[in-house]
Length: 428
Image 1 (tube, rainbow, N blue to C red):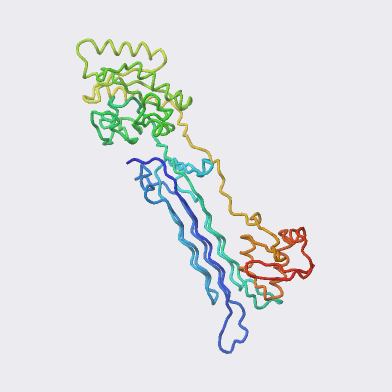
Image 2: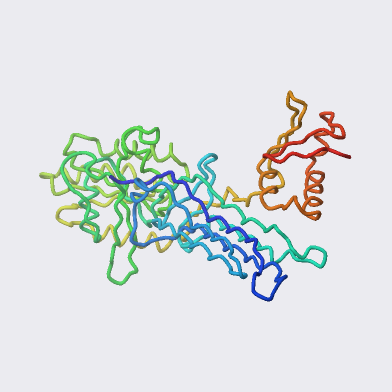
């Protein structure tokens, strides 16, 4: 099963916490603090793997987490840094933020490796907090939290030429003849269930990359058939080869088919529909008598005045294919290579803990409570048993507006304030 879209969860590594410890050696009665720093958390990185052309790898693995940094140790030992996690994706993968659908990055062309989520910085050990007035700091800095995100991966194939047309007109046979691709070929509709890529090698030229875009039928732009799933793969192509069954082996009208597909391309994107194209009138080996000349003449009269060349070919015998390919190569040489890159729309911001919410309320028993992630984290690294630690605690409450909220609720001297198991008497 081909996969060109996947939703996954990604997370960088958390920074390791700083350590609280003191030097304890014989004959060294006051060795001082020696808590080491925590290690850095690992980065979450996306990298293009040339060997991949689908997102099948993400059908079974949906969670990708870099390694956390290890906490610091005693004797000033630095915690080990967490390992980066490199997520391999095929070229042409767009990474979007899942909730907004905005583009985070486009892993195409020169952008082959990008750090998406930075790992958290390690916290400082208590050795950094010793001062002349605080020689025994009993607190250390916690590691910086990890960054996490739900993202959508969407693959938009990178190819110079897109091969479009109704099912069963011979696109896969053509691709297998002109490139090294080996698509599945059979005489029934939708044999091709994924965009196949191949490299066309032409003597005296650099050649080009061609992609077979399957599933285009009437209504494809509205999700009918498989078209809606695969139309996105034509967005990066510069030229389109529009293939039709000129012999009408299934009773279809080749002129009508071309009009229908072009309308579907226009409904999907005016910009895509306006790109240069040529018509490959396939299956001329199936004609009898003068029918070939009649059909090809009708096609040329209809489309060549619009600047669209018509080439009668046989994907089975190879007749007319060389002339078509050299013409397409000349078209590519004249068209400026305007790489289609999807611009960044979503900026990943590091967590701003100054804006984290907190709650202050009065219980029925007359006590006041303060809760919130910032409060809990502050209590985790502040030693309230020391004078300096308690001063820091008071300053924290004031600067973050918590004392103001208590006063709005009518707190008075002597009232009890509770925070995560700690109780204090309030005094102005």
